[in-house]
Amino acid sequence: MKTIKFYFDKGRYIMTIFIGFESGNSYVKSVSSLPLSKPDVYLNTLTTVEKEQAFNPFDGQKYLDVYEVIEEGEKLYYRVGLPLQTSNQDSSSMDDPSRYRKINYKIECLIAIYRQLLQGVNTQELIYAVTGVPTKHAGNLLVIESIQMQLKGTHTVNGRSFTINEVAVIAQGESTYYSELLNERGEADPYFAVQVSKKNLMYVDIGHGTTDFCQIQRLIPGEKAQILGLKSVWLK
Image 1 (cartoon, helix red, strand yellow):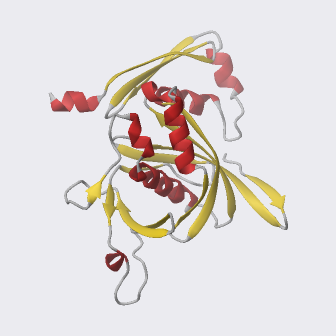
Image 2: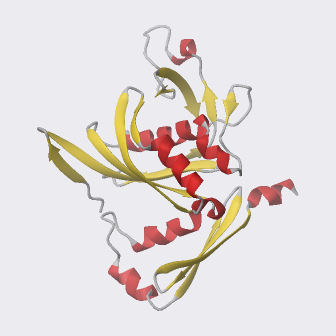
């Protein structure tokens, strides 16, 4: 059962939400602590929409599948999840760590987080987020700093402002382990912990760009490794 925390500050309630997300090389995935919320998965593409095409000409209302993102004071419009077919489409997908500094990566992440928030009530939120990256990027301080600089702070999507208080970055291979070990309140599941406390586990994350391995020894994440993903197989 999902739980949620409220804090009372200056005469208003502030909701604390935990969101896990990933702007992967193939798909964007997200999940949150919001009650009754569902995991969200869609193809990782951004389709740029001109302002004139973002609004219905008959009633002036923005189309529901268009996201308005304010970036440095400018309103930008996108659709997500469409197959790459036209010149106005793009994605941050690439193996180089520089992808985390690109505007596309930031937009992909903000829309993913917004889509989770959309499943709850419209309140003042304080968001704690965690994202997974390929193993070879997880320990790179420049990668961590780039992601945090892009996402920490207050953002506005479709007129809704939200504040990301903290962003944690972990290796993709660790994410399934933590989802099994911890509950919605960040507490260890005693049944699972007892079961694996004396065991060595190996988690394997077979992705589009990379296949990531994470070894768990007596509940502690240990050795990690990374090899090529399914893309290399398809290319052959």
